[in-house]
Amino acid sequence: MCVRPDCPMKKIIAGIVLLVVLMSASLSLFAWAIFSGSIGSYSAVYSVRAGSFPVILAHGLGFMLVCLVLFSFVLTLLVRVSALGRQNREFWALSVTVFQNLESGIIILGQNGIIQFINKAAYALLKKDPQVSLEQCALADIVSPVLEPIAEKLLSAVAAGESFLREYRVFLSEGVRCYRCSLNTVDAPGLGTVLFLSITDKTEEDEIRLKLSQQLEETHRYAMSKDNFFANMSHEIRTPINAILGMTYFAKMYVESDKCRDYIAKIENASELLLGVVNDILDFSKMKEHKFSLKPENFCLYDLRKILNDLFSLKAVQKGLDFHVSFDCPQDFSVFGDQFRLTQIFMNLVSNAIKFTDAGSVSVFLNHEIVGHDVILRCSVRDTGCGLSEDDMAKLFTDFEQFGKVLVKNHEGTGLGLAICKRLVELMHGVIWVDSTEGKGSAFHFVVVLKTPEPATEADDSELLPVVQRRSGIILVVEDNEINSEIAESLLAEAGFAVEHACDGLAALDVCRARGKSYYDMILMDIHMPRMNGYDAARILKTEIGIDCPILAVTATSEKDAEYEANREYISGFILKPYDPVIFRSMFRR
Image 1 (cartoon, rainbow, N blue to C red):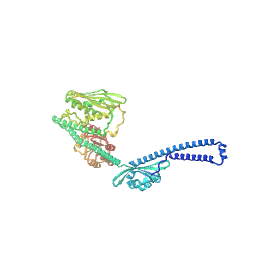
Image 2: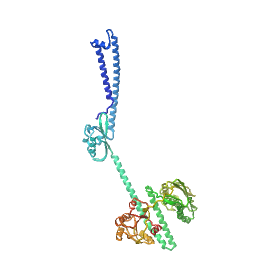
Image 3: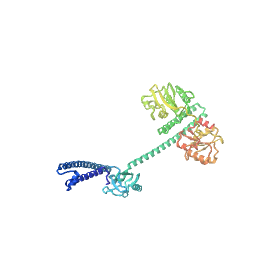
Image 4: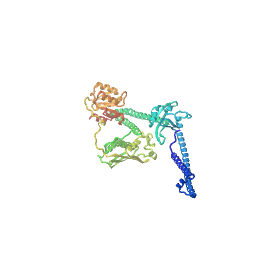
């Protein structure tokens, strides 16, 4: 057992010894004065003549009183010393009990590395027999097997009197265990430097960390797989939609029968509806993963009124509805915000209003207010349709929810449109709500916050579609889908370009090596292809073959992912599937 800590008892005991010595000396002096044979000396001291015994007796009684007081004081000190000793023993016993019952192993070492104290937990953790005392043993004799992985550094720290901390794993007969070893130095008065070694079993915490790490890795893999799934799904679905819309575009140019034109128009409408469903699913997925962001820009707010009129006036007339759009802003009023997503909110709400209104009217209102640099838009879409019940309104903006009674085989939709509207409005720091009476119509209201126009800046060249410099008049189309390749060729032929084809990235490399680096005016490169994707092919074409014409990426999504950012120096721009003939023609006729 190590030496107990120092306490005030030593000073008290020293004081008691000093008082006893003084009392003994005083009593001895008094006895010598009375019984000494040198009366002359005594008389000299006390100036006592013959017949003065009462004076001597008085002095003796006074001296005895002083001795009694001193004796009482010594007795009191002895009582206090006894009480302090008892408290010290009790505290020491409590300290030992606490150390013995700790879950962590505690070893107290002297400066020479000799064990002065070791608790029961340390015996158990070190796999030692508690019946065999390890006190006064050297720490170096008990390192195996638990402390063996850190023995060298631990013993060096003990020898140098330095602190040490390490968490480590060790292979034992019962399996892999994790321990945390901590060595701290304390300067104790009267004891010098004392080393406290703590050993804690961290196996359970280590297993939890490993499981969490594995779960995090699995979550990351799942997120990557999900992203890849949606990217592939977007590509695979948009590819046939592109083929359908492209073929219907060209079919309308050669069909003269009104009935056939009607069939083609229905095919086109169905394809656009399917494309809208795909866009809703992709947008919703990005919002759920918190990967969705707005792309603000300066735009004229009044242009939105024209867009809504162009999109929905004919549909309203076909259903016999009055359609009215009212904006209170000037025609040249500009704001800074995401025009595409604001238009998407209006399109979802107006489309629903027309869809669920069989008679009456649909009205759109927008009021604006400028507060500092903020432009607050208060918008409403009102209809005289079927209206909503209280139950429907309670779950209206919930994911995948639709209006129960009125959607039974009567109306298409994914149930995501209003949920997406709600998230878009919230991204614009706004709120959306509905007022409705069943059988009388509904009014959807939302408020969003945009900004006043930002100062004009130069456009980022990487975000613009490339300008085609006509030289050979030949464009290479790299596309694995024959129908999409045929559509691209037809659209390019309208712009006056000849087309050559490659079925994938590797084929494009072979063709470009054979033709030379300046043969093509542009390369139209699909991103998702077998054998070699468009990004890898573009990188090799630019860095190894030295192609000097722009490479235009064909993608199914407008979102810039990490792969796009990593390859933007090789890609001059991108165009979306399905091809928009208007954009396509304008780009190649510059």
